[in-house]
Image (cartoon, rainbow, N blue to C red):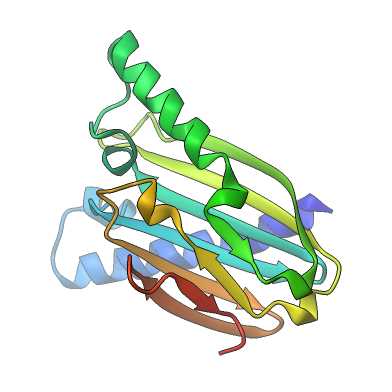
Length: 178
């Protein structure tokens, strides 16, 4: 069943990348910037709801997680990275879906884009929802764990509705019914 969700996530990634590439192209930036939209202080979140499954990708620059921009170069930096990832992996402490939807976290994974000079950390998060039609709100409270995070650009497609929103430290709620 998870393979079915991978296609929509890939499509969202492609559409998102295309939008950034098109914008960069119009501004005359180099091809390096066209491929990878990386902005300090800004994370990206894509949410796809497909029947009882909810899949969330959360991408954040390494700098906003660790305080340094490159992959760890020594044991001290590796410990900082490991500790921060362990903190973010406590997903239920910073990502809350309204209880009426009966959503349960089923799996998550973390990947580091170490091939890029300025790496991102990608979190894939999956839920199984007993009453997906009851999903109304998603609260994203990661700002207190990551002080340098200023904004999260969110896009979602749930129950044939799509929308987008910028979350901030003061406005952390996604209303998926909008």
